[in-house]
Amino acid sequence: MLIQDATLADGRRRDVRVEGERIAAVERRLSPRDDERIVAADGKLLLPGMIDAHVHFREPGFPDKETWASGSRAAAAGGVTTVVDQPNTEPPTIDGERVAEKAALAADSLVDFGINGGVTPDWNSDELLAEPLFALGEVFLADSTGEMGIDADLFTDAVAAATEHGIAVTVHAEDADEFDESVRPSSEDAGDGQRQGANERTDADAWSAFRTPEAEHAAVERACRVGEELGAQLHVAHTSTPDGIDRAKRAGMTCEVTPHHLLLSRDDLPELGTFGRMNPPLRSEQRREGVFERVADGTVDIVATDHAPHTRAEKDAAIWDAPSGVPGVETALPLLLAEAREGRLSYERVRDLTAATPAAVFDLPRKGRIEAGNDADLALFDPDATREIRGEQLHSKAGWTPFEGWDGIFPEWTMVRGKTVYRNDKDEAFGDARGENVRSG
Ligand SMILES: NC(=O)N[C@@H](CC(=O)O)C(=O)O
Ligand SMILES: [Zn+2]
Ligand SMILES: [Zn+2]
Image (cartoon, rainbow, N blue to C red; front, side, top):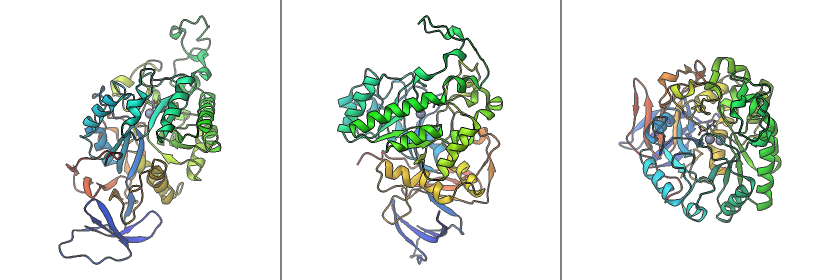
């Protein structure tokens, strides 16, 4: 196949030849061979497919929230060609058998995938770390969906074990000791005799007031200290504060930012209500701006979505009862490209945040760059074709998005290892190819 006259993220116009699963050549002009299929890019933007290092596809355990089939369709429709699934499923992915069980379910995936292993007091570290894991993580330093928060000693043991096996550790960095219990209703009193709920609140912003920025700062600091002492490769998931980012980078670790912490703030909560509840929570507009600066200037390593779907019915609850998490895998690249179109990020930066750098950080040598020899994981975009995001048009089972009404630039087609998995010309269609585990084979 010959993709003719594509514009790459750096502005070069190139022809790209795909042979089988790989990119065979990237040149100014390539002459079509006999019988070669021609795909006219007409100067449109060709990007390496996004590697979303942080999704929750919910199988096994919660197929009403998402399945590998539905989640991977959402990924493909958003230009994402590799996803990394997190361990807070039911059962949690904490031993060899559960990795195998999840891998069997992931055989439904349209896009390539990685499977992370999780840590709980019951984990089987020897078995788990012998599996072809993408990374160990997200390791929860505080409870989030799935209540897998662990204590400091277990965290240190887990980082040591992963490091011995040469496996990176991704961390959910919040420290519950720094949460502001005074805003939480006293009915939540854990029975420790402490007076809670002195400033009891029920508005949506209460979640942000409760899970404080200081909780992130403290946990990033503590995790990085452990990482430094053990010579670990630590990656801080979903950093939501400028200070959290700076602490991770000062310690020589990598970090990720989600589209929601990049683009939404506490100012959006009156409108979003519980549909804006996630961990870590949305921060002040001032902090959001600081996060955006660090994403735009290259301080932040990657964007990953923390795609965490819950049904509308589940989310439609009181702020202290609703589950935490928002969907995002389908809208990440479209939103970033809309930002680039407005001049707030460069297209090269978008490519690095979503593809080149995740491939480098997590050691995927054949992915993340449009270069001869690499996997043909590609997505084509018309940067002038913005579309209003509508939750009901997205493919996640969630059926809603915190970005309702925002502009997005969606792919015309998405290709995984040379096979078209999604196209949207006259109608939308998905391919029938299946993804592979990026750590197997
Ligand atoms: N981010 C969230 O608020 N929720 C995630 C878990 C997590 O990433 O902490 C989920 O699985 O629902
Ligand atoms: Zn998390
Ligand atoms: Zn997560």
